[in-house]
Image 1 (cartoon, rainbow, N blue to C red):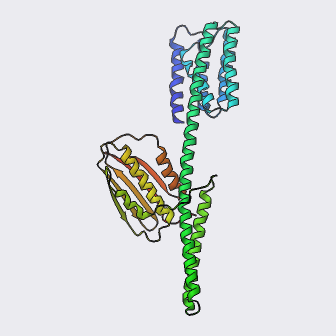
Image 2 (image 1 turned 45 degrees about the vertical axis):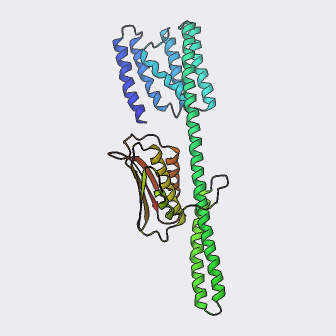
Image 3 (image 1 turned 120 degrees about the vertical axis):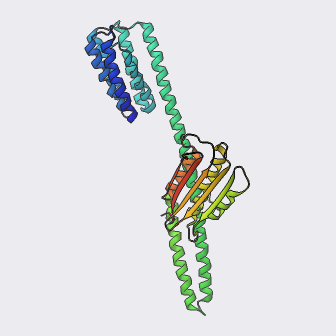
Length: 353
């Protein structure tokens, strides 16, 4: 990560300057080499935390044996505390146990050889345990958020599967009606029966495509709620009474738009309006603009609330992005240049396959 390189660029010169300018630094050249030379281990603390802990604390033990005292004694070595944090943040349970043993073993060696007083060693243990606890807390928090995000994504998959199910049911019903009409008119008007077969063939092809999409989306375990879902026409309902007011504009021909896409447009606009009403401070107006062109459906929801910086994406936006991605589209959100917030989504007009 670029921040690691910035950290590297700051710590190496600091280690060199401290080693050169401080008067009480023992074995000055070796101290600078060790303090500055171990800084690059921070670059791999996320991917190989145990190895980096073993390298750093092993070198510290060896350098102390060479110097015959606790070594090196530069303050810049406080960066070493990033390693136990990384070990408990990104390492496995086995790596955390082995790494903790290495770090505590280093303190034990220093005490046994007389390089460190027992009280100082106990203080070091307290600091290490505190840093490791912070790393474990960050690990737990990240996993909890990942589980919550997975639940949001699964819910969005279930909603989309419900919409697809409703669409397939529509196609099957249309085929049944046309088949009955063809049977009734076959004797008197064979051409009408042929036309009915053509319609059935087209509806069957659409149903098959959308069933493939439903199978792809239902790859996650667990049953989905298959109750009827919303349609593009339901976007107009977003302009119902409420504060701030909502202005809905739909431009383009919605005929032939697959039901999953129409339902997605409604869901995206609904979530964006809900977020604007909940979070947009001092907003007086929300605009929902849906543009349907030859290939895509463009959804844009904008409010005129007080400006505020972009922050981490909430679960609502995560669900919106997941739904758009499942249909082969995109969804983005962020603050406007002057004031307010905008959610933009682009969905392919074709049905998911």
